[in-house]
Image (cartoon, rainbow, N blue to C red):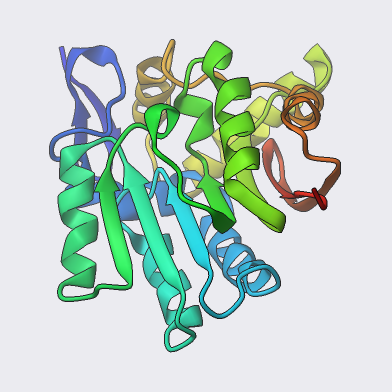
Length: 240
């Protein structure tokens, strides 16, 4: 039986998917569901300029409808940079491509980031997408990102995380449920969305994520955004 999770999205088979009609409602849904989602876009857009030189390359992994890629394009348009969006879902890719018709400097690729043939890059953005990749596949993906980055390049990685203790996780979880209720979602929709994400979204603690970054080769890591269990980090690749 489909689960009604709000914003006109019905999840078939009780498991969340980014495929199909979700693309038509995704931007509105994620903006309401994820606290300070738009603020995260602003932070990424602003920080990317510190690492993206004229002639440079930026990847947006899990670009979905291309909303963040469009903000990055607006920020860097005219600087002779190349922007590459990557998403595995055909419907998301089609939606994103419509934003950049006749633009040779902005490309949207349908691909799985885990098997992507990376080009040398200066900035890689991963905005709430790695959390949907199996945990065992995350270290090699981060290592591939580190390899693709030029020395001095940056990864901007935003994730939903787990709190470090059961007590804190309970408090954070309840606060997040309150946020969704305050956004106008009904209790049944909040429960339905949580059910749909079982076995699909697998967050780790901030400490776990930082250990993976360190293992991939990143030595300079700083938190650039934090709200409840939603965290953004900046990881910079050191010199060769």
